[in-house]
Image (cartoon, rainbow, N blue to C red; front, side):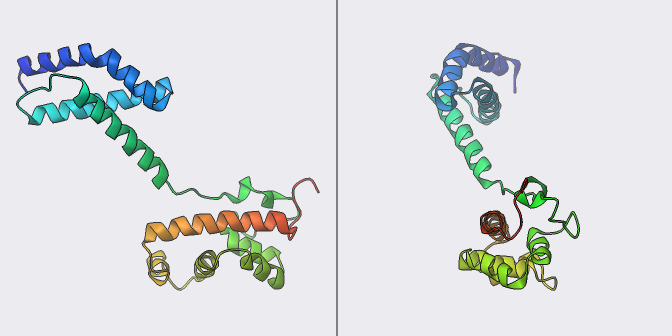
Length: 183
């Protein structure tokens, strides 16, 4: 990019900065996140300007980029798979000793809860969640194979597992199969 084009872009950014920042704040309501979004939008605008001959005259072009950056951030946040930590749950009661600290919650619950109670806990889950948990207990197949058996992608299977584990922890808490902390 030539020095003249860089100066034009700098001027554009200088003139549009305050309005663009206000626009970003109106979308997210958090000043830090608005500043991050604006910074990312300026980088994307610069890259787009490198590929074109003319700089757009109004700020609407920049507002559209800010909107897209915001939407991309929301989508990225929603794609994150949440995990359930055994140590952060009610299963940390002193009477509930995990076999292995890195053990899956399903195996830990199975080791501490009688088979009949474990089956009752599983019956409180949806059929898909129960099936996903049962598949996770198998050591002879990979995540990819488990996903194939559930007719979904590996990422979708991991999401289903996270939800199923969270619901299993909730079922253990409410069933009283394992004493709650402080009892």
